[in-house]
Image (cartoon, rainbow, N blue to C red; front, side):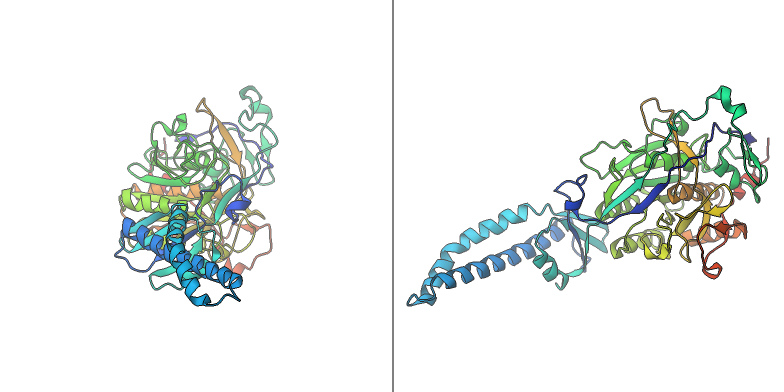
Length: 475
């Protein structure tokens, strides 16, 4: 079967999924109630209530000690020359103790403690801890494994200068063919879908596809939400969780919808029969937190069916032990493959989480000339590359028919997730790493060039290839 998409134009915008770590006060789109830190506990016997009470009691004890010490210092200054000073100090301390306890309890209520639990062996508590002294103290507590800042993750991007939702008018399409140095590409085709369907750059004006690809597979898209009513999803998309509590579950930014459409859209997707399960962890500005991401992964563990589920993470950010531990547990213990974007910093993907995690499949971007663009991260942590520049997919807005053309490794990763869903719908894999290896073994080799200088010894020169379409008789 030959497929011809709708209009494609060259897009000057760069879609940047690199996640920027900031403090809560530096980012106005995150409200003042956002937790500042996450405390990972050692003892796996703590449930949510016990973990909550444990941290609350430790904070209360710390605040009482701090209040007592501060008060004692003040009283000593006031009574340096008073006879029987020690006796007077003891009397005043007893009178102050009840007031200190009330103050500590009031501060405890302002912590907004919340527990994060992947399973019985992974329990953490998030909270608002403005006192760095408490964080320094809790780091060394015998019940605490480690503490991490609840970094703000921001997916930043520039929209095209032109209104890309209108693209070419149908009557003008004959006059808008784009001629490239290696081939002629019709504006009525999605070049990314064509490229992963071909071994060379020739004949990218059409591609074959299997209508049943991805059938029975659920793809969890942890992102800004998904416009589940878009016609390209045909009712195969639904929202399963929303961790942005000050927003509705719908996609208000567009990033998640674009990603989901490339995975499983009827017209724009690779696995055209896969189901999309939206887990909202980013707000309309593309801002999310480390805590929201871990909660999203916890939701996957609680609801996914191993062997029938995939996770798409089109984001990148500062290294996090908490995220790495959660993802590794998801892959190794729950048998759920995780595919991630390599990031758009134009540097080594091994510097970032989750692309540096050895248990994920990290994807870099290519352009229409088989070149890895300057923005795509590279290095040994990138397993292979897929189309990521000038990628057209589904978008938001009320008519449920909008599309947008964007750039980024966020656009490359869904191509490979679609390939994975297609493979999983045809065959049972014993582990995520077996699936990863099959995708690598089918990839097209030694076709890439790099816009930035790289060491060929540490960069995989592989382009994603969708062999699934070859398993289907062409019509």
